[in-house]
Every structure is written in C-alpha cells, then in structure tokens.
Image (cartoon, rainbow, N blue to C red; front, side):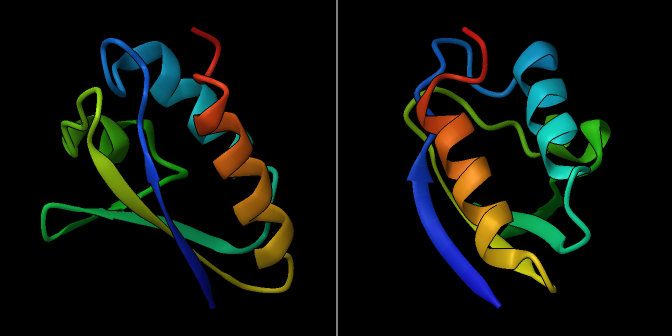
Length: 87
C-alpha cells in the first residue's frame, strides 16, 4: 500500500467534470484506489463516491493505492490532480 497527500487546486473542486477525469484515470489500474477526506473514504473509481466527498478547491486529500500497480497508479493520479484535471 502506498499513499500521498495532495491539495486539490481546481477552482471548483472535484465537481462532475474533474471527478469523471479522475475516475477515468483510476479505472486504468487494477489496484484498489481510494482517498480520504475529512475522516471519510471515497472510491476513486466511482464518480458518485468522488462527488459525495464534496472536495473543494484548496482541500487536501490523501490518495491510497493498494495492489500490483500501486506505484504507477499513485503517480498517475497525483500528476492528474496536480495538472488540474483538465481545467
């Protein structure tokens, strides 16, 4: 298992479009991918779960990847979030 904290820098947080981009990136990997935010855990492969976390701009989440390709998955997701998830 690997994890990393990262700050969401999208102006509107993880609303529908960036949540979809995050999920599309996460489903490319066989590892279980979740993130924790304010004591809750969200499945990064589920748009509804990501939206339900209500992550806003400037919020810090902790990505957790567990599985065969966990290192690749963590790098890809942190890169995607750092780049603004298409915004």
